[in-house]
Image (tube, rainbow, N blue to C red; front, side, top):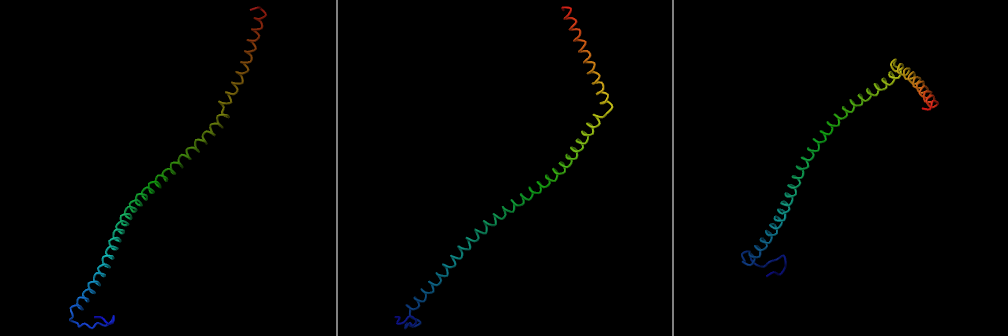
Length: 145
């Protein structure tokens, strides 16, 4: 029997003392086992999280590689379009310069000057013919026709 918490009057070979000591050891082992199980469960949970995150990292790496390639393709296309745009701008400027030149030359060319003179002469002839027709109409009206 125990008189004090720290003292035990049973002998070292007392069966009840040995059983109590074994119960304490079993309890200690069960507590350690409980901690090990808890630690193992945490470890398994962490492993699961690490596996999930690793899979996500791999997926994100693939997505990053895909986006990087797409970005490179877009830059290549953009560069090509800029080159084509530059060429088109040059062609447009050349066409505008040619049009300006044609307009300038066309208005001042000998052919255009000649056409303007001929047009003026045709207008005068047209007026003269219109007057003759008018005169003939008046004469026919006087004649009663």
